[in-house]
Length: 299
Ligand SMILES: Cc1cc2nc3c(=O)[nH]c(=O)nc-3n(C[C@H](O)[C@H](O)[C@H](O)COP(=O)(O)OP(=O)(O)OC[C@H]3O[C@@H](n4cnc5c(N)ncnc54)[C@H](O)[C@@H]3O)c2cc1C
Picture 1 (tube, rainbow, N blue to C red):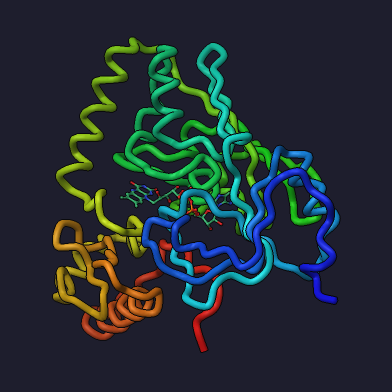
Picture 2 (cartoon, protein in one colour):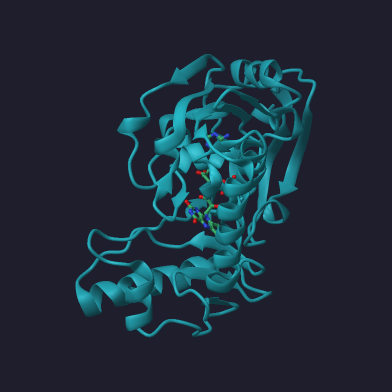
């Protein structure tokens, strides 16, 4: 009998060998051994507490910064859905569930006359992913507005985090600490709703013209090395728009990998690795993946 035959009783949805490609922006990759959509936080705690401790558990948001490898993901992949998508305001504070879309949080904040969270409108992920990655754009990042984040550790115990100043460039609090973020509290400042909405509209317009937001992409592929822009290095190494299997770096933004339609995860990762090697050879600079690569390659 394997671990999948001994899963604890839960109220949410459990699916075996569920393809993950439809759950990611890049639309590639194999299945999760088990995909779990918990009914609520207690349900998630029950699954974590009752699961064989040796089984890996991986949270997934909307997969806007994730490459799932072709062989799929070992263990349980947890996807938080509607029960974790609440957004409430109180004064200048916003409490959001980990499955709430960043853009939705920005919208609710703006309607409540809360400024400072509008950068979230430009990030197409969830609050869980944003806290975990310390997501940001145009000079603002999660650590600037985060008051506290809350989640469950692998064994199912609740934990909280309230030291946002310790977060760094694309390093947040969550997955790397072995925590599934369930909700977070943010603080903005009083502002005119119309002014906040105008700034959000400007961000959306800027995104439309500078990023391939309608393509199958994973957002920024590489973190910016200190003192350099990854997009410039990819460009100067002459990889912009060059096909590699079914993948390429976007002609519009050369740090965005895109799946042209029939790429495999191996094509996409292979292209990223080829560019890393080329940039290291040509300029002596090491690029580090910002996209999270999950799971196993096909043997
Ligand atoms: C067109 C486009 C533009 C983008 N622009 C930006 C940008 O300007 N700035 C920026 O920072 N990012 C940007 N991104 C990347 C991406 O949107 C962010 O990193 C986002 O925060 C990821 O959220 P997600 O829900 O999609 O996370 P996923 O991609 O699903 O997961 C990302 C990581 O977070 C972990 N994670 C997800 N949910 C949880 C949770 N509940 N608890 C713990 N860990 C969790 C996952 O395990 C994984 O390691 C862009 C992406 C795209 C496609």
